[in-house]
Length: 109
Image (cartoon, rainbow, N blue to C red; front, side, top):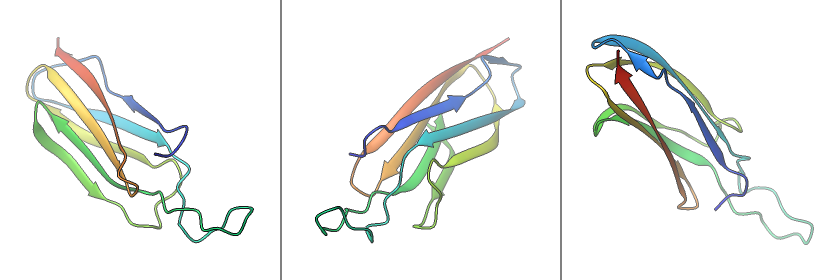
């Protein structure tokens, strides 16, 4: 598991039913290509976020596959329709098997 990984997500607290909202996500993650060596000459294991998903009440909203060229601290901004009150679940998958997730609720108002 990479150290200092911190997912951050911005979702409005409320929306009208059927509204399109803007969601912003950022995960603090150093990313390691697996090509560098440590001070003793040993390869540093690859650690790259390779997939990001967002679900709303269990339904897929976004599913992104990322490749080795993805930047450090990947940022995504996207639109989502909000048909009802519920919960967004955001998940990031790391090459090393680690999974980072967070949730945000939204109310209809």
